[in-house]
Image (tube, rainbow, N blue to C red):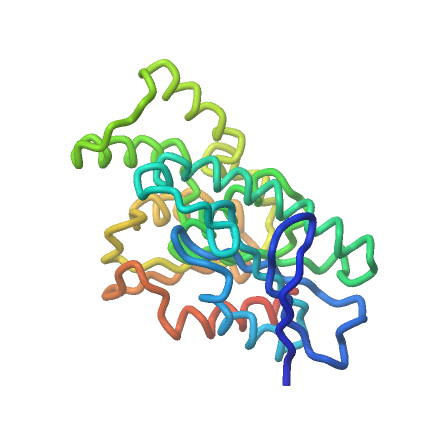
Length: 255
């Protein structure tokens, strides 16, 4: 049995999932970040299985999502994508401090996972936070700059107006460069990383993730078991049950 509580951490609405008998204990902690246009409740199956395995699990609502929805149009939400990603990365750190300071999280046993936009934020957090000990990125993208360019090209193809001149677009791209893990893979420092991506994904390009995996494989020489990449040949932009179970297994092994 696990309990699911709605609360606020560092000003962010979250679902807090934990076994009732462990509610006040110092536990290993896992953050699970939802995808674009989704919400925290949509990943409760991950929270349930991880809490059942003994973890404290926190599922936050990203900016403009779930309880933080401000009714933005699709266009405005799309244009806010990278601001949401960066804000999420910042808020993860603030929530971590909250739980550690309250004695509810073991600072040496903290994991981070996410789907789609949440997977992108996971990669970004790995670039800047050494306290993330273990990570799982499902349908994410570590190459921020390349994905930024791809999104701009897609917007042009769909004739979506981007209210920024090229110089400001380049400035926006540079703002997210510090979170681009593909440009600083050494920051992984051998931390356990599990990556899952469907080859038929039409939303977040599979190629960027696979290229990154090939890029970082030499960094795990001698510790190959700490890096795993599963490519589902048939999956599109949807996490499979296999990915769910492998995520739980990964955290049980390394957190």
